[in-house]
Length: 152
Image (cartoon, rainbow, N blue to C red; front, side, top):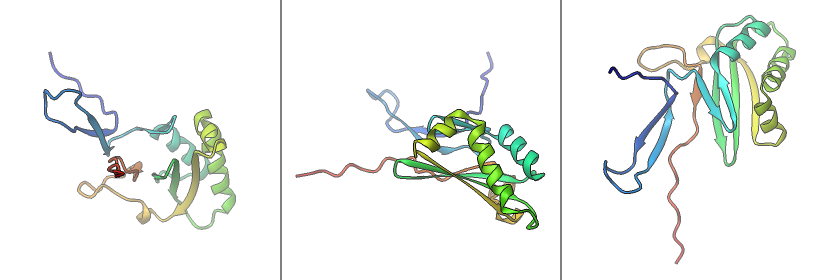
């Protein structure tokens, strides 16, 4: 039977050799082909974000940058648009993104998530280093656990 692969968006590895008792699995980041990214309890879907950005700005070029600061995550929606648009467009885009998903709204209300919208040039959006393809999500969160400090 052929093996089917479903791109979930995560890159991971086993931390111990095969056959080890209580073998551990570690997240290493996001795949460039990811179409769904989890941030806390929310799922960010590329198709939905694309539709919102296109409807409100007319732009097809956007990128979500995900960062974490302690126990709070921050998503920054960067979109490439002309400089003639007013800051009200950025505010409307932010509000629509927050109110589109109840989980995002709950996390923002609980101060677990910050949402920013930045208009930029198309050259400010990062591309895949080898293929040059557009990266809808740029996940900059750290997935490696920090070593525990031992107390004497």
